[in-house]
Image (tube, rainbow, N blue to C red; front, side):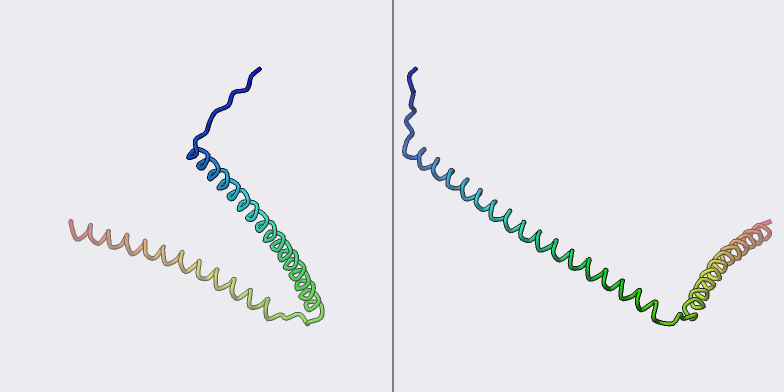
Length: 116
């Protein structure tokens, strides 16, 4: 079996080397970006873990405060007043819409009667 060789011109050699170097540069740049991403991801996970522990501590402190502090009945009455106000507003909206419909029908009747 004989080997065959192909002669490459100087410009083709230059072009090939340039493309090979660019590919190596892009590869190394990609590796650098991946390493930076991994580092940032580790920092993110550490921060998330820290946030989770701090929120857990805050909730535990709030539970301790709820056990220690006296219970306020004002909040219950305030919530009841807010609910009553919402119910009243719904009733008013419903009654306003009924009153509006009644007035509209009366106007239509008046127009019909005046037209005849």
